[in-house]
Amino acid sequence: MDPEIERLLGTVEALVEKDGGPIGKLRGLPTGARWALAAGTITSLVAMVIVLLRRDDFESCPTWYLALMAASYAVPLTVLVGRVLAPLHRLDSLPERGDLVVGAAFCLPFLWALFPASLLSHAAQAVAIKKDCLALGVALGALTIVALRALDRAADTEPRTAAMVAAAGGLVANLALVFHCPQTRLLHLALVHAPIGLVLLFVYRRVTSWRAARAAGALQ
Amino acid sequence: MFRTLASATTLGPNELLGTIDPPESGSRERYGLAHFFHDADRDVTNRRRLDDSRNMLSDEDLMEGYKAGDRAAFAEIFRRYAPLLLRVMQHQLGRREDANDLVQQTFLQLHRSKQDFRRGSLLRPWLLTIAMNLRHRHFRRLGRHPEMPLELDLLEELHTGSRVPDAADAGCDVKALLAGLPAEQREVIILHWIEGLPFNEVAVQVGVSLSAVKVRAHRGYVAIRKLFAQESGVMGARVPPKGRSVGTPQRQ
Image (cartoon, rainbow over all chains, first blue to last red; front, side):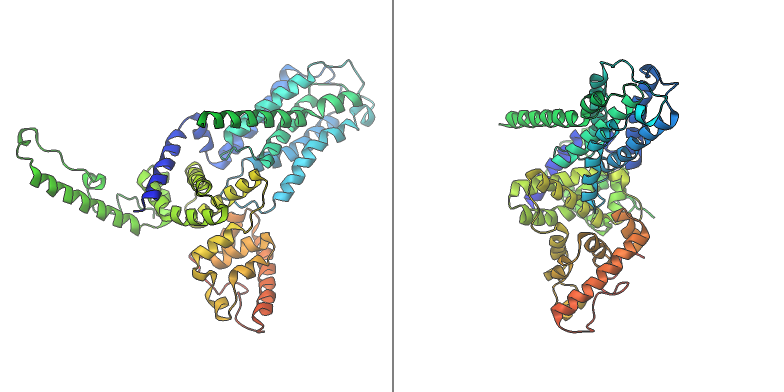
């Protein structure tokens, strides 16, 4: 037996042993179960906003508009979550397509800011500005990122993965804000709602860099 | 039918564990050097028999065993594939430390993904794909592009001289042929032609529909024919098949 291989095996077995905690158990679940958990978490976050922090004009707001907005966020979100949680034993044959989805996810809220409900429907009226949109959005996005990180088996910090989870967090935040904030002003939507994904990306990158530096420092 | 390591041998529980029976409390004095060597010899013999029985198990049996909680099966899988992965990774990455790290990560991912491993799947392409994806991520993290796709490098390792018989007959390098294909066609061709997987399994591996796999394979084989003809200069030479001709399929 090759001593180097045996030594490496010892290290791997130690890694596997260390992976036995709650996070390791989550990551060890079958892909379908991890996907269902992620979907459940996101649905719960949005449902919590609808139940507890619903917009004032929820009853009078056109249903088709809410449904259209929700669907437009849910579709790229589904693709992103699927890619983040994709098992590594499958080849990612079209990574460029994933990059397009990430780009679209960051741009979509800006696009919707140009078409507020007041433009699309006479029923929607501009109301007083909600002051908690940014904080609520960032909190929901951060929770989404934490959930995806916990369920992602590789969970590394390379730029593409970071962009995907941040974009997913931004989409969840904007999806929830559709049901929370009745504001239709372009400036509010473009400066507070839409950039949440980018804010999350910035913060996520800073946090992971800081953690990597700390881990490197601990090793030295 | 899945066989556990235990059922694959005729050894009893103690023998499976390879333990030395402890002496009776009252006969410790009599448990001298001769007994020790006798028991140690028996232990070595048992271990050899156990190792031999593990060697007879297929990768897939071992993986099923590991799913059922047999850690020795994981060690056996590691011993079978770690040397190959280590060689290829070091060739690709240059640094031994990076190669060691990626091999460790590959097997950690194998452990985390074990519940996704389905009966009837093949372990080798499964494991190599994990390694390939981790290698891609490693290069992305460094902001570099791999100089050579891992699958081609693995091919070189898995198939001596990187030649498949029919192509070799005409003096054609398989690696060069495959390198001339778009990535999505190459992936399908490798799994179907080299690995010998049927199209439905290739579809599962790649994660696209069966018809999409067939289209990619058709285009890939047509392209290979052209490349092959160009390289060998022999029109009508035996080339990769419409369906398959090279590499006996492991399962249909």
